[in-house]
Length: 254
Ligand SMILES: Nc1ncnc2c1ncn2[C@@H]1O[C@H](COP(=O)(O)OP(=O)(O)OP(=O)(O)O)[C@@H](O)[C@H]1O
Ligand SMILES: [Mg+2]
Image 1 (spheres, rainbow, N blue to C red):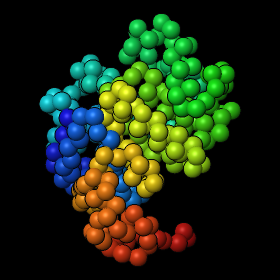
Image 2 (image 1 turned 30 degrees about the vertical axis):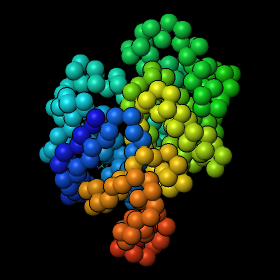
Image 3 (image 1 turned 90 degrees about the horizontal axis):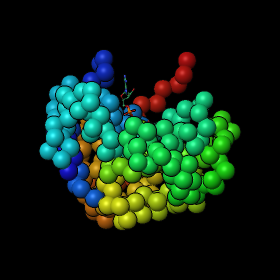
């Protein structure tokens, strides 16, 4: 289980997390939804120790990782796959090298036959093995996303964090990714934490959905509960209406 307790994080004057509590159960797929800039990516970065909270605690299977550093933090990070928003591929490496990037360090047993691992993971995300020789600049946006996903699952982590896995993909490819997330949960018992604005995807893949608003989780329930929620915040978000309690700041660019 991953437990986030009373997380607070402020950047300058921007209070992003304001006492956030959330428990993630082993083996579940949980989606965090919330507006742009609400702090969803910031939460994921805290879970893997890339950001430290100003206050509060993060535990992974009862290990307090809040103040871990160096090798001790590395050991925990080995259990996590992270699909970064935007992919974060290394432009100077080939697709294959990108996918195999963490293997040497994290899974030396797999690193010995890394080319097979690359081909297998490319297959899982619906790409041909020949893609391995290309550079990221030669790929479409959707292909980059799938390569980044192949990299996140290459070393077979027990927890996978997906930051907007279907954004920018066509509906069919989005569903391929949905099925892949579901498949990893079923076949490997992976625990998935997904950040998305794509409600079709959220309802399809999630056991539970959490809504982030003003630095806290303001709603949490099963997919069904959230879908039928009468909470005005949740309803506004899932119907995508600009009218309701959530007020977006829109300013003309001068
Ligand atoms: N390293 C940082 N330094 C300063 N401010 C940051 C940093 N990282 C995030 N922020 C700020 O924290 C807030 C939340 O950012 P975050 O990236 O988590 O948003 P998000 O919910 O993922 O939004 P989106 O849906 O647009 O990706 C934003 O206002 C952002 O500017
Ligand atoms: Mg984000």
